Image (cartoon, rainbow, N blue to C red; front, top):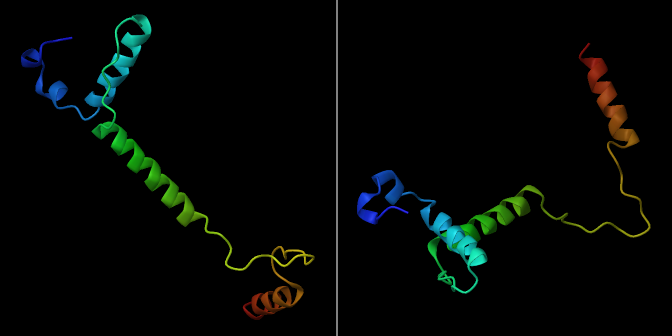
Length: 97
């Protein structure tokens, strides 16, 4: 790896750099198990990942909310429009022709 003073600015300030360095340290540890890995317990990268996962969970919950009323046991859940609703829709469509 280049010395920090020789690195271009885009490399020195890359947002993904902490993740790449952490991954490189883990790979190096696999190759050389005698050398301990110096990975910070709580770093900014893992905090960002945690926040992204939490945001994803919240969006998923918003997009598919739980039903307000539980389904009554023994009563089948109605699929689509009922007979009266279908009749009213047909009447509405016929009146527009």
